[in-house]
Image 1 (cartoon, rainbow, N blue to C red):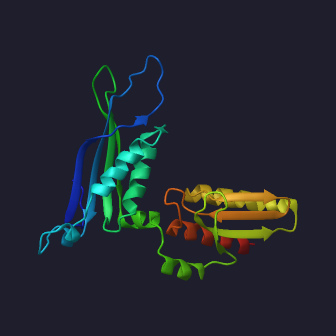
Image 2 (image 1 turned 30 degrees about the horizontal axis):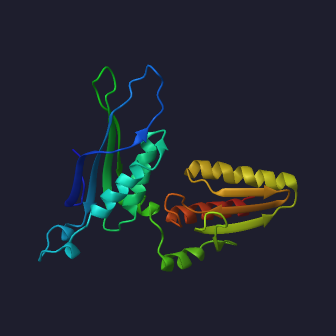
Image 3 (image 1 turned 45 degrees about the vertical axis):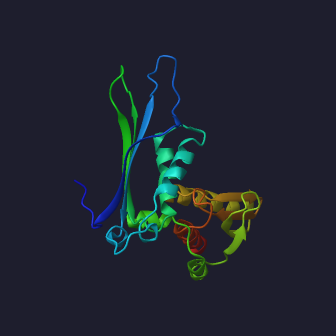
Length: 229
């Protein structure tokens, strides 16, 4: 049993998605069903209402429509990638405080079996995926050194930008490698451009199409690299 401090939830069960997941050979068993289970943990105030009306509850219909769109949005190599995109879609709704999500495919062998992936996303993780409010952006910028707010020239989304001029080509390569290792550790990968002694970094959250708390956490860690001996 999953213990949760939230007392209210919206449950979506056995939703068959029209999606294309995986790559299969001529003798592989190809699943004919991908089934989603989703539990959204909410404030009880959105369930125990004093008067009837959609204005007083969580309207889940737009989210379900977005899940359908994501499921049909091209080929996925893994179930995990579609789950990640659905979680990001849920993060756009601040009424959702936490969630449980599972996606399974069937059949697995000889017309039987189901194989799935399930994850519980707590409030801390969900908040890290949310686009940061504009007022919080200005406050968070105060904790950074040398970063500016920018719009990505190709993706046209808000991002953090910083550039360096290093004393040598070797120093620029070393800093590039430090940032790459740090990004890998945080599982958050910025755009890093290097040209001789010049280095440029842009950070944004791709799935959120904007800035999240994860971006500022990575930028702060990169700043610490700059001051390390």
